[in-house]
Image (cartoon, rainbow, N blue to C red; front, side, top):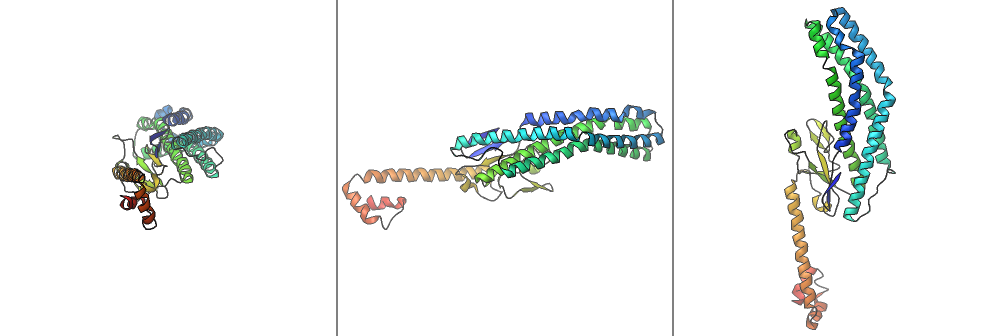
Length: 318
C-alpha cells in the first residue's frame, strides 16, 4: 500500500500477499518436475544407465517447459495486472491526500507496455524452471560420475532438485513483483512531475550492505543506482525488499539533489524552509497591523516602488 508519511512523500511497497501467492503458484511446478524425473530410481542404476536416464529426463523436462507456456502466461498475466490495479489504487489515494488530480487508469501506453513486457519476461522465466531443473540433473550426474561417486550418493544430491525448483519460484516471485511495482510507480511518478524518491530498506539483518547504505538516500528517477555490479532503483534488484518513498509534493523542488543526501539532511532543509515561511507570515501580519495607521499607509505609498519585497516593507512602514 502507498503508506503516507506526509502530504509530500508516499511509500510504494511490493505487496507481500501477491508475492506469496505468485510464488505458491509457480512452486506447484516442482511436484510435476519430481514426478517426471523419478529421481528415486537412480540409486539402482549403472553408470551408463544414469547417463542415458539423465538425458531422457532433460529432454522430457524440455517438452514440459513448452507445454506449460499457456499456463505460465495466464499466471503471469493475472498477477501483474493485479500489481498494476493495486498501484493505480494507491496513486488515487495519493491524489486525494495532496489535493491534486493525478492521471490514473490503464490508458497510459508506457504502463501498458511495461505490463506486457513484464508478462512476456515472466512467462519465459516460469517456463525455464523445468528446463533448468533438467540441466541441473544432467550436470549432477556427469559431475558425480567423473568424481567416482556411488549411485546412491548421486541420487541423494538429485533429491534436492525439488528444493531448487521451489527456490527459483520464490526468487522469481519476489524479484519480479518488486521490480514491476517500482517500474509502474516510476512511470506514474515521472508523469506527475516527481523528481525522485527516498530509498527505503526493510531494516533487518537480511539487508545487503550495499542496500543498507542507501537507506534514507534521495535518488532521482533518471539516475538509477549501480550496486553490486547491477543498476536499478529500489526494489529492482534480485530478491530485493527495498522500496521507494516517492516525493510528490511541493517539497520536490527542495529535494531535487544528487543521490547522496541522507534523509536527516532532507528533512532539515524542509524544516528551515518552513521556519522561513512562518517568519514571513509574522512579518506580513506586522505590516498589516501598521497599515491601519494613516501615516504608515502614506509612507508605504512612497516606498513601495523602491522596496517591492514583503521582507523589506516593514522598514518602510515601521
